[in-house]
Picture 1: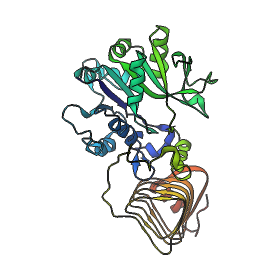
Picture 2 (picture 1 turned 135 degrees about the vertical axis):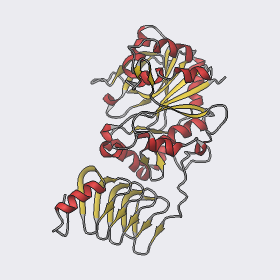
Picture 3 (picture 1 turned 180 degrees about the vertical axis):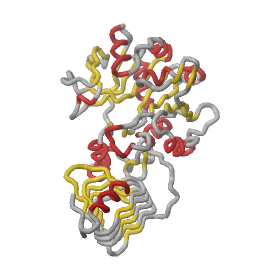
Picture 4 (picture 1 turned 45 degrees about the horizontal axis):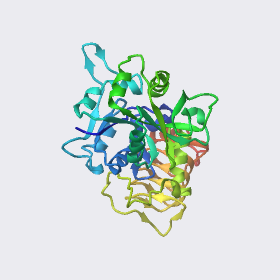
Length: 380
């Protein structure tokens, strides 16, 4: 019997991230040079002494499943509990493709029942934050709440989130999913804890397919005891190219936000690449950048982040660039304002300067370079 079972929703496609998620689930996207988005939720769980988690997959799960494996990186390879991949399946009634967050959980209530948990912690697997869930659980039990929602004070783009209205005691009295005119700055983190009995009652209503749009408003209308828990640390929902880029650059410009350096008390675990240390040559110039293991830098980095195994040739210049694993940049190439996807090879003597953050890969570069093969520079 477990007091808490966690259910992490990791099957999202993340269409607003464009080609970054064209063949991988959003939680498997690289972040900060050495991490994946999923590292934060899994690390939060183990740092909160929660060792039983179901990962609800759907879109392009292979890379994510291969990366997590048996969960040993996060100390989740335990006999009683551990990490479990929960996939869509077929029954005599038909295929069980996920129609929403609540519908996804409903498909796997037998997993929750297996552990006879008192409470269920429901999470999104693609948010960036360091949170001790034990504080959330303590507040939930002290309030004798049926549902507790993790919240944060949103500073901008409040209409991207579910917005809560709360009393001074944090009791939720109103909730709107992505309202055009938000009534407060209390935004949902997509972090919920339910009494298991209450969750099963609510999921028995088949028309309730999404927590934000359906379940929480319905629970309030039926006078369930719903509370908010105000989280005061750094939180970022990286649902767009802009927010993913900003969150990466915050690691350079504002390292105190996420406090990754404070790893002794609350580490963020990630899978080791087993690569040698990075190497910066005499010809290189490095300004306000982050470089991961296995990189060789002979060119110039200015406000850039390199994932493992990248090679930056002589006289190449990267500014405001996030390069994923195994990127190769040719000599005399100039690149500004973009994500460079895993394994991309960019020839020498190109100029790729974008006004807005852009995603590039070998296919796009191949098309542009062939089209402009007669010129020395490629101007965009």
